[in-house]
Image (cartoon, rainbow, N blue to C red):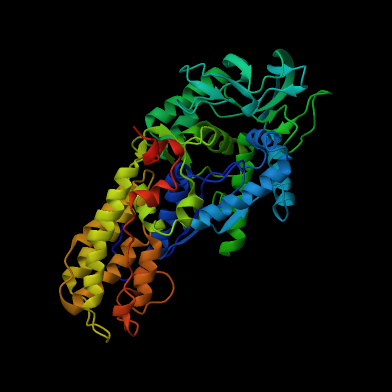
Length: 543
């Protein structure tokens, strides 16, 4: 990593970040935010501080079976549910300051035509290259309801670890499997006995295990995830599902009458990625798909452990057979963020909703982001504990950091300051480099990025000149973590736009009356947070 402040040179590079498509069957909770979405946002903000050109593109996984489950529960249609919650998801991301440059909804224009064209072109190319095959499988069916029991309609236990599962995958061990492999299968609803029917489905082939494993190793994928991929390929014969017998979805030509034939969502993410690459070419001005082999764009996806097989096999593996597409350059995998030691759960109402946090007057979105970012989800699961969060917000941030910020602003002179010392510049440069190491690689650590911010925050700002440059450095290092605070500090110091390393040395004049506009950090009480907690975690219900 080159020094940004002491050399004064940095060649901007293009990046495309694609966090996972959220399933539009409900709003987002902090478990969603704390992993792939916060990761992609922090990476993009640091890259912009550094002078690079990142774009974040995601969208709505509208054809997931869980959309039909929600439609059934709400007596609505899947299209209505997908549209309603798709809008909620965009609002939730914005409320948590998760920056998105394009949000793709594949069942709505202007995206629908582009997505379907990409599906058609991609399948034709894969078929020409012998990567599409047809085979029979046994799928559960309820004659009484006339429903194919696939996706979220199917319940049972994982054939690998025995954990409870819904659909084709296990959130505990990341395994994916055929419906007929589910142990103790049963329908989600009490709608009659299961019968098993033999149908014809399409699958995509993937390269030999050793070939794919070599590519994953080059991308720094941990051995545990590579072992999960190897087990999957061994069990499913180097294939991944392309179609499923479901009514809701992008219909493909049916190989047999009477059986619906739709693009399986976990295969559709390959085409979604290619569409995101094309959109990047339009928005960035490069004019090329980011996934073209010679695009010069660094492509990154952030994902939870439940998406290991769809991403590492369905996108990375299949792209190797596509012939005109490079795989993701980086696949950044996080463990789950839990709530008080238990999995965030919409159905069990064990969740803190992003919208509730953002709407709470006494809770700072910045404080929530800071607390979430301190978790090391790359290494293992972490848990949001209400008492820990309150200690962070009240102590680490409001009492400590807030006091330092107030003292620094009170000592500012109304004129532009002198040039910062060499030692101060070198110290800030080293910490910006530390953030680059933490956020711009095949493995990332949001905790290390926060550590760099904390290290600078702990330094003493001495005198008028030191206070100005300490605050400005705080804005650069804090922008990925606490963007509202960082942007506010930057603007009060006379800066324009977002904090940027290239304009750090511009000694701007602080705004008039800046001492009366000092940013503050809230000191929430337990009751303030309790309003956002699920009933089981509210103080009056805890024993």
